[in-house]
Every structure is written in structure tokens, then in C-alpha cells.
Image (cartoon, rainbow, N blue to C red; front, side, top):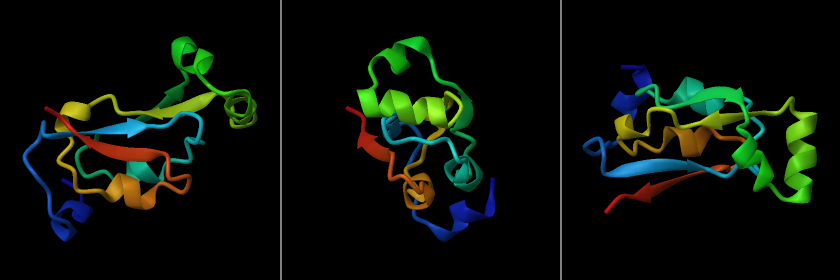
Length: 98
């Protein structure tokens, strides 16, 4: 566990999930580094996600190398909020799961 988890209040895993807005995400990486639960990874944006981008989002994606941040281990999220805090584009939200 990374140091940041000790500095925030977390909940039980599986109660929240991070959602990335790919129109805003520039995959700069602070969320990946900040997450104490290894929820995120940066990789090439998937074709289905790229197709859903706005015109401006598609341009932005091309400029930033066609990469995005994915919550590949969303089930590990404990809603500490560090990803939200450190994302420079404000592209991540935490949603409560039913």
C-alpha cells in the first residue's frame, strides 16, 4: 500500500468505482502514481472509447498520443479520492455502486 492511503479516509473495496472522462483525460499519470490500490493504468485508448469522444476530444487524444487512463482494477478502489485530487484535468469521478 502506498503512503497516501494512510492520509485519507477510505471505505471498503467494491462500494465505489472511478469513472474516467476520456474527453478530458490526457493520461499524464498523477492519478496512477497517487492511487495506493493500483487501480489505474495508462494505455492506448480503445477504439470504442475513441469513437465516443467529441470532435475536440478526438483532437486532444491525437495530440496526446492516443493514450488514456483506465481503471483496470476498479474493484480495488476504496474511494480515498487521491486520484480525483491529483488528476490535473479533473477527468475522474468516484461513483457509488449499488
